[in-house]
Image 1 (cartoon, one colour):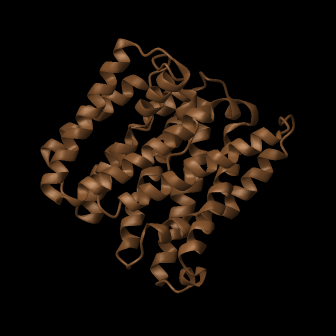
Image 2: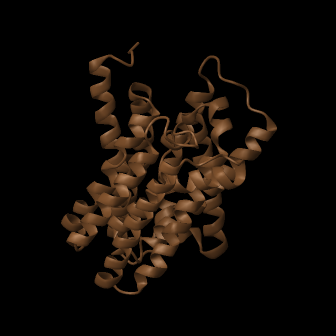
Length: 316
């Protein structure tokens, strides 16, 4: 059993948090590579969900069988249905769709605004008070995103506007998931909730796919698409979940949340290196501004909406 002050445990926690943040973000890189083979967001999402499903089923069974687990009620299952649709179906669908139009660095910055959306939802839906410092941090974060957005609009073209709107919808959908899942997370545990919600999301994705296309289409894609999808399912979906939970257990939710800033920073350079996306001084300044604002909001005790609710979840 490790303790919060165990140096070895903290070093491992920092490593898990950093690797998990980079892997979460790298799904955008893999999606961009898949788009080069003529597929779209729905194909990418369906493959990601189908290939990661067995892993999350095993995780859900393992978590359900752990001693001392709280029995789930009918209301719990109903809420998981809603959360699965919001958090890992709609959010992921909008995110992958938006990635068809925006560079990965801008996509990750917009998604990184999740803590600000959760804060606003808490204010309007749950009447929570927002401190002056939090308003300032939100203003700084949105100013940074606006700076990066305008620069990408100049460099990439007007399609960035549509893509950014889609990614913004993804961030909002995921923020609703975070805001609604707090009590359920405390009752059944974070890994159990993620596993069940991913199963619901997979079912929703398959239903969407069957309504629009023949499922056999997924069996006729170029071979590299499947390898990229497998990497996405394992290394950018399942493993980051377990890494992040391990980091939270060793460092606490607040520290793990702050280390997630590594994700957007890594994508600025990975996008340039692997995809040839432009990096300008304005983009770097805007990225720094956004990360500074979000860091203030994710400091332990600084957030009107508990940090635990945002740190214990995967990104879409």
